[in-house]
Image 1 (cartoon, rainbow, N blue to C red):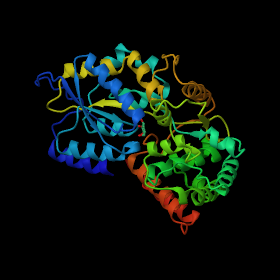
Image 2 (cartoon, helix red, strand yellow):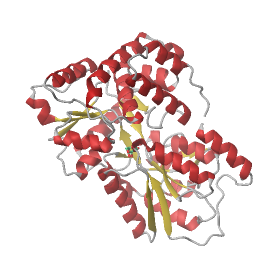
Image 3 (cartoon, helix red, strand yellow):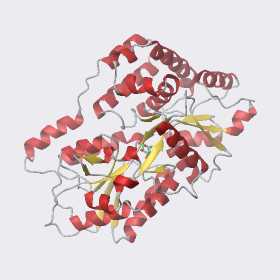
Image 4 (cartoon, protein in one colour):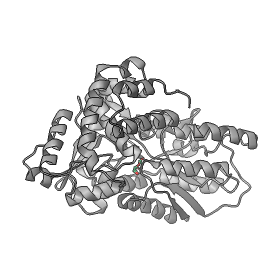
Length: 421
Ligand code: GAL
């Protein structure tokens, strides 16, 4: 919705701004302003590698970190700055929003670096289309994050003689037993995106990839109004009752801290948690284990981070060239993803030296790709338009918080979400 409004304002005020306008009059700037939402320890450690790489290429970085996992706040600030005519030079973007920004004429075209680095051949297939607009590359693919992970404090689980759950009903049973021992099972903050991510894991894991695609990506009325959705919502309700008493307004990385300290036993979140654990020198998987959340088959829910260069009167083509060449290089991508906890968006980068959770994630991704179980996240801006993403996530949050909300109302509300961009 916000992007539609932005689009209208933009078209009315700057009708001559053309797609991929390359400003050649500005003198080359050495300072790059970079807007992103990497503020946790692991994220900052990874971001420092961006800084280092660009500094080695003769640039300086003016860092604009915006707190808020999942990037909602960062994206609102980006929109405000774009409307004001002062977008940052470099931005962390995800999913369909890349195309929306390109359609508005904001993004530099990166075909030169795409050709030099042979992206058509070297990128993972899931990283190709999302970084292109009308056949031109407009963003640099950086990470693939796996979102269906359970991070488990093994010691606490062992203390109570409990096994790692392999189904959602087992997971509910383990949570119930932990509660009986007075232990809070799940590190989960009250933020919408954290709760929506938990639901996404449950919906995908319990319902399977085909159901998840039809119900939550295509919003097919029949798939939504199925017994599977009722079964999922019943389990979501039980989980909400078990975990709500232990919840507070914590960020995801504060949740990871509670997990490390043994104050919580599970965290269900993406492998940015791995980056956080590695930054804290926690041994993974010996102390905190990584297990795929229960699913019918080996499944993989992903999101991806990309970097986009924003075109503005102060940008310079030579600067854009240096930045894109530096950040698209396999050396940079390898070093960055190792620290971030993610998988490089290029398939030709070996994972030697990576944590075994990342190596397992890549193996599972390859299996999932062959069996139709590799799907984009609805919650983390990958699969659907920002409008659908926001509307779906806010219904999930309502259902989680409101004991009186009936499954049929949840289903009805989702069926009524407008599909526009
Ligand atoms: C995601 C992003 C990750 C990670 C996470 C938590 O949206 O893709 O890189 O930063 O948010 O902040």
